[in-house]
Image 1: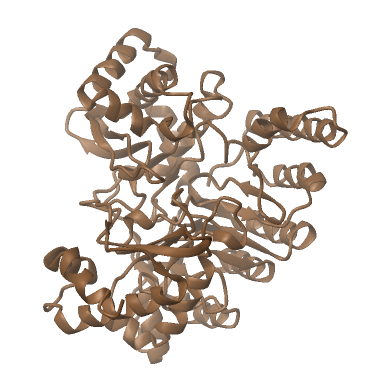
Image 2 (image 1 turned 90 degrees about the horizontal axis):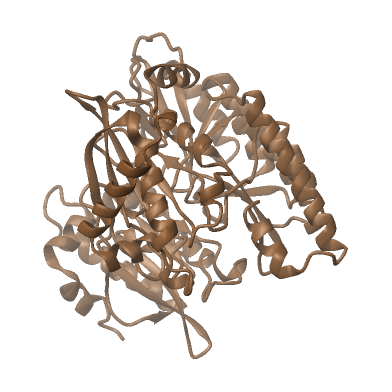
Length: 544
């Protein structure tokens, strides 16, 4: 994986010193809150309902074992012994003391980590396919491109204070495992007969209070010009985006207001006018960075897997093929009964770091589904690995099933939330507690957001749940049919909001109807497409 060069380290160290001074001035009353807020936000520091929260960047979702081990130390020393992995491949600490945050940032810097630009109106952490570098059909390891974007966008003086936050996602396969169509900019890299490597660029996607799918703005452009085109997009947005209303300030609003063709013309004009040869990406740069991400694995013989039924279930559900024969990518589900989605204890972090060192080239991935991956595990090591994972409650074989839900922290932690989210995730485990039943149901994504900011990505769930306030009480709207991969779609509202205790009975009726009326080989999202939301509304609200 990529290692900091002296410039990277100097930048991070300087930011720690700078923010430490800013914090000292703020605590002494010398820096007003309105001036401190944008400074703390661009260092990933939020003030939540109960305590400060720090969001730590995990660039393109790749961690080394020693880094995860240090995160465990921070969780023990400064937090309450756990961390929370997010839907944008980062980690959050929810119980920090404000005055200790600079010290935490200093500790992160010792292991080449930071919280820079994990919040604020700037270019955020670039996300990508969590299986990058492990699949056979990718045009290039997309983390190479993500790292180039990171270097270009970090402390970019022109884009430090955009109209609003700006999120970029990158894939290099036909299958989209990074939800590029619901980002401000989505990039798909592909092989090209003329350019060698080319890219398509989507713009104007996003969730939140105005959910929109992105538009494919550009296609078949040479990859070496990516940073020039990104600069053009950001310049148009920075100059023309609204700053008078934060709810109308995202690039998706600008694209819709201008129209796609007018926006494309403006971006193309900027590209031609402002083209900078220094931003071209050379083949040598791609090759050098590619070497830092390459994993040298020798093919291994594939062993038969005649283990226990538990092993076979876990193998089928929680492991994926690897491009190198004899290896698998192993998913660690962070969706267990009694635990908030994405939460992992300090002890579990230590265990995962040790297992990564032993079995996965000391590498861990984070996913936008709030799970973790050991990406390079020899098939011959799988049974031993499963034993180790099981001993620490990390082998729950529910990847992609109904209990593998996404949930934001909700009203339990977030000052913006209208309703709890975590209690509904727990209720899913209680309602669908039989793994055989979950497997029979098949792939079914449930995503829960506590407010319209949609941090739980409910718009792109097969079943989406949105918390709303009604007469001072938390209620929930249900959407159906959303998805974030090929043929991305936003879910359609099922009907009126329901109170907390009615959400799971409603979902149970939906699932039971699906099991009774599905066609052979039909999954839930296809069932919704076939029958339509209006038909399912009658069944879902039959007792209301």
